[in-house]
Image (cartoon, rainbow, N blue to C red; front, side, top):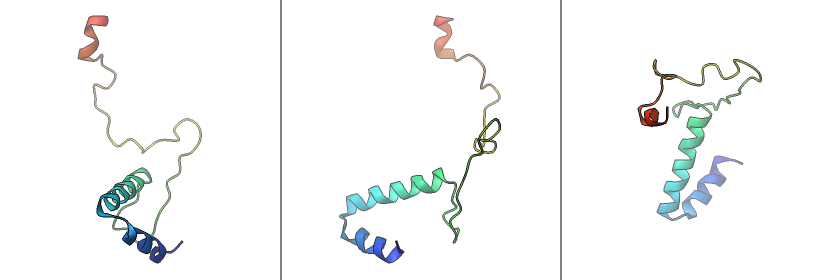
Length: 75
């Protein structure tokens, strides 16, 4: 499907639905780690097995494994 077909369909939608489409496109770009300024689309694949998701999580806090303050009453 070419961009011309998508553009024609998009132009038929009311503004509130165009905003939903834009949000969906943004979500897809984030999910597949596609730079919006990139001219070529790149796919993102996860390798099966241990370590297959390496590099997906960009930041993890140093105290990630520490007990949460909210659950102190239950411990």
